[in-house]
Image (cartoon, rainbow, N blue to C red):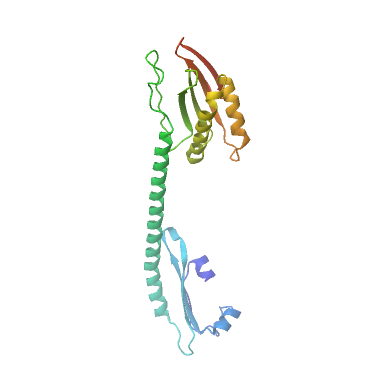
Length: 229
């Protein structure tokens, strides 16, 4: 079997016990093998898929060259069927994963606010996030504080794809929790940093630019943590 796999050759032994080219193993003796055929299953680009082996245990009943040719012909068809089946399973798995990623993108997008009328008629606010892949670690958020001011931030989580998107949701959730009790944007970033660092086995991080806007006088206070202006 190993020789057929390694070398991609079909093997025939008409007489196992009298075959000088065949090392007689304990397994062959215990099975009382008389004759065997062993043909590799070779798929696309020479990929080894396995072998088909036929054994004869009856004395006087041996395989011949014609039997080997027939089994080799059958093995070609079997290899095609097996590889097509494996390819089909892979396509189904990829499609299922694609649907899950699209669902994750939809869920992630719902965490980003889309009501830009929050700041009132005196100012304009707009944001949009377009992920380079299906999901990403880019984020923004804005919400009113208890005193009426608006806290807003934009950020970018290290890394890409699903891990970054999950960390982005954690950042947004903590920001919503910590924002109302912060005394200013710098205090907000300090609190958020401590909360993220306290339990972060993934070692991901996020850069943030945070601001607090007061629509009563139009003032904005800004602070940033590793995020360019």
